[in-house]
Length: 280
Image 1 (tube, helix red, strand yellow):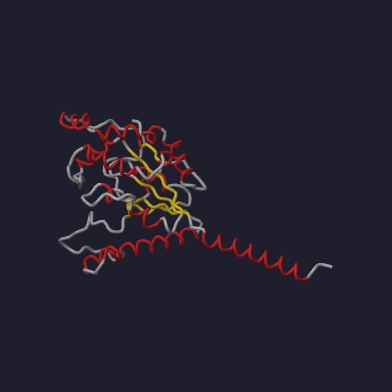
Image 2 (cartoon, helix red, strand yellow):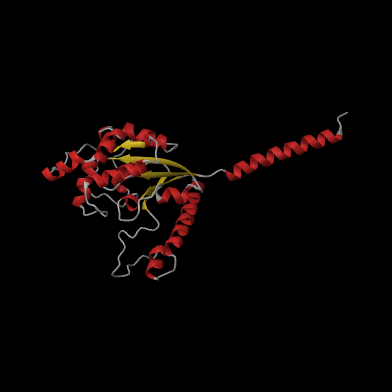
C-alpha cells in the first residue's frame, strides 16, 4: 500500500510544477511586430503590402513625443489625440505622459486585435529619432518603450541612401545639421546598428521581386498567412507616400544627380561604411 506521505509529496511536487508552468504562461510576453525605415525609402509601399496580409492591422508612423508636423501657431482639431492636446494645454512633463499613454495604448490595441484573431504591426516613425536635431538614440524610441512589454519581431527596410537623400532634400525633410550626405549616412549607420543583417531587407530587392520578398518579410514577422495578391494595396490608407504614385510595383529610374551631390557621395566615408553593411 502506498505511503500516504509519499503521495502527499508527489502531489505537492506536481502542484509546484503546475504553478511554475502557469507562471511562465502568465509571464510570456505577447508578440508585437515593428517595421523600421527612414523617410523616402519606400516604407509606405512596403507597409501597404504588409497591411494587405490576412488578419493584419497596421498602425502607421508612430512616435510618442516627436514635434514633427506639430502646429505651433494654432491649436489644431485632434479630438482623438490626448498627447497633442496635452502639449497645447501646457501639461507638465508632457513627454513622460506621452510615453506612458503610448505604452498603454499599444498594450490595449495589441490585446484587442489579438483577441479578435489578428496581428498588430507598428510602423515606427524612425525619422523622428535619427533625422532631426535631437540627440540620436542608441535604441529607437518605439523599441525602448515597448520591448519590456512585448516580444518584438523587427523588420527593417532600407533603400540606397543616394536615392533616399535626394528625395529627402526635395521634400524639405532634412531636419538635421549639417545638411550633407555624409551626415545622413552616419545617421543611417546608427539606425542600423541594433539590428541583425537577417532583419534587414532592401527596397531594391522588393521592387524587383515583390512577391518572394514579401513572403520572406512575412515569415520574419511570424505572420500566419501570406497573400501575394497586391493589386488592391491602394485601398489601405497609410500616412506617408512622399514619392511613389500608382499601385504598380517596379523599379523606378534614379533622379538626376548634380555635380555637387556627386562630390558629396565620393567624399563620404560613412557611405562607404554603409556599403560594407548593405551592398548596393
